[in-house]
Structure formats: structure tokens, C-alpha cells
Image (cartoon, rainbow, N blue to C red; front, side, top):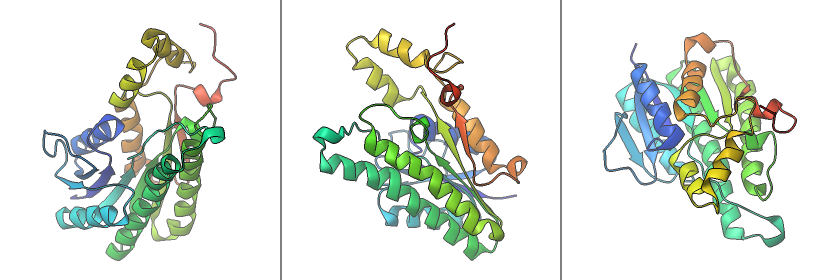
Length: 248
């Protein structure tokens, strides 16, 4: 059966892994990227160039996807991480985080449910949240504010649009080996120590591969998850369940 899905932030990291997995599973993938890579559309059938913070970007992605095949899935993934110490706050940075990680997800969910209902058929949304929506790390106030909101938004969509056959779920990753994470570790005073600290946090004692997150997203979009809605699934190696770092 022909079906399309929108994946925001599809060009690299978790988003790229999600786009690759869904394309392999037979989805027609429309990506959203603020600056597409040199490899063209990659695993995507089409890529919309635009900022995820803008409502128009999501409306265009929905339009392009529906042109290719009935829209049946939507993955809000595009996001940014910035340090926001409240005692020395930069207002522009906070607004950027809230607009991309918060409003961007609202616009994405709105475009998805509007299209699903216009088609008169079911659909599924997966929002990529974070362990930061469940637990805190210093100086991440704005980021954690938005990631906690992702879980709340997910529940709202599930409750409001469930009667129309629309499901919404979230995944909450911990540390994932993305280009952004690699750059962050490389910039640390002691990169090896920074990586060990991150890897030693979860009970599974390692950093996740983006494909592991993509596999869970693919499951939540699939018929195998047909009775799962309104949930936020931790994909963090048990980190959010732990009381401190476990001994080996």
C-alpha cells in the first residue's frame, strides 16, 4: 500500500537514520532540512528546505508528501540543543530553542492531523523527545522545558484525535552517537573522559546508535503498534530508570 511520511531534520543524525529505516520499510519519505546536504535527497523521495520553526515549512512538507502518496505518518525530529543558564540568560538563545523544539513540533502535529483528517483516514505521529524531558542536567532549562512539552503535546494529540484513528507517541532517547554529539565530545577539554562519562551513565553502559532510535520510531508508526497511543517511550539504555550511575 502506497503511503508517505514526513521526517523533519532528515539530513543527519537521528533524523537521517529514521528516514533511511522508513524508506527501507517501504514508506515514501519527505524530509525537512534547513540546509540539505550535498547528497541530494538521500533516502528521501523529496526534501523541503526550510526552518522547522516556521509554520509554512510544515504545511509545504504535508503538501509535497500528499502529492506523492497518502500521508500516513509524521515524525517531528528537528531540534537544537543550547545551554541556557538562568542566572545569565540570553533571550535570543531561549527563543531559538523554544521556536524550533517547541513551536516546530506544534506546527508539525497540526500539519499532520489536518492532513490525516482531510484524507478521512488514520495516521500516526512520532515526536522525538529526550531523556531531558524526564530528568534534568544543569544549564539545560530551555531545552528541558521544550522536551517536557513534547511529551505533553503527544498526549494532547492522542486524546483529541484518537477518535479519528490518529495515534501519537514519543520516543525519549538518551545519549546517541550523532554528528552533533561527536562535535560536542571533541570540543571537551578531555574528549575521552567526556565520552566515558556519557557512556557510563545508562545501565547498558554505552552510547546508542541512531539506528536503534530509528527502529523504535518505525515500530511506533507500524501496524504492530496499532493500540499504542499517548505514550513516551524511553530509548535510553535504562538511564531514566537509574538512581545514579551503576557500577560495572
